[in-house]
Image (cartoon, rainbow, N blue to C red; front, side, top):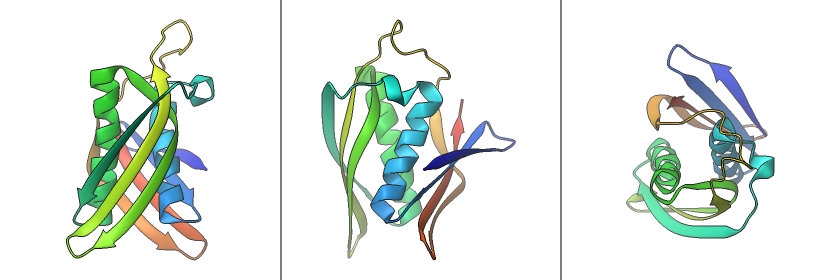
Length: 139
């Protein structure tokens, strides 16, 4: 599940999941649903990557901006994600497989262009019923 919240700096996204991985996955869906209707994005292509972060906020920041890199460079949008997060001595490591397709302007009604994810108000928090993440995007 993901929701949007208003801020003075563009658009905020809040995502929740029963696990940390599910919260990151929902956060990524929230990111792409700002740009396009993710229900119209087919799983025709997949990309795989690994990123690291010293803490969970840096991991989230790196994860979302890595996805935006593939959108900017490869012209891809995504609708589903497999996410695995591990903690080690240096912090956190995330492995992701993202599923989507090339942007087709006739099929994908481009709603907004997301320029970047910012650290402003970024939060990764464990709650009683799971995990919650919050982040702000520059539009």
